[in-house]
Image 1 (cartoon, protein in one colour):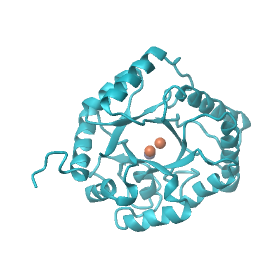
Image 2 (cartoon, helix red, strand yellow):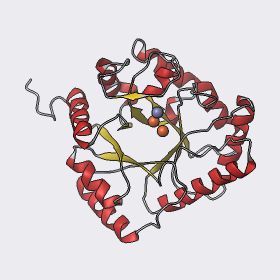
Image 3 (tube, helix red, strand yellow):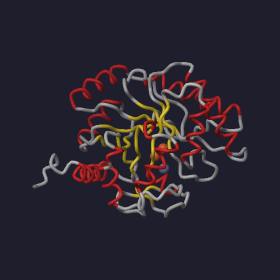
Length: 284
Ligand code: FE
Ligand code: FE
Ligand code: ZN
């Protein structure tokens, strides 16, 4: 069965997200661990977590994805900001200990004027320090569009981070379709060769999740503006090919398209129909 969901607001807690996911036909979801621009996180409500876990078990929600706030910069040249990223990621991962199987996705950061090599070293250092705690969650580096000085604009940069981390056994990658396309990987024209390239540079074993977003801009634009599925430059056919691709089989897919719940529900139905025509009730 296709594992698909979307980004949901975490403001009402875990049970509310689980219920919302099921209502729109999702069997997974992504959420921000805290306000994406803010630093403060609400105290974890353990009753809500317990209610959620029970609900998830009864409704087939297996594994969810937490997203770090995107203001964090684990490769800032400012030591205080790197420390802040480290502390927030640790605090997020500590909370995720209560949600078995949850994964944690983050943006590698921006090197600004230090150069990509320095940025990569700082990110690896932050991950090394986080790794010392032995948190259970798999931590995912997100592929980035290469806006400004974002690290992770190509597969080689992600590989370089992973290679420098002392224990990379709990490190993976989340591939964002808008970001890789904006980064110059032609998933619309040559999906197979992009997957092949990812495999040879990073290794498909590291690919743990995908963000499904169409792009408002063209190949290699480095813009990072998400579009609804089928309404951008990537196009519907590519998303059909992705959810049916044998090498991507079993991955959880998360929509981060500019939609409300109704729009997400439609996109989930559309992609489910493409991936599981029989289960979705098509006539054969
Ligand atoms: Fe992201
Ligand atoms: Fe994303
Ligand atoms: Zn994005």
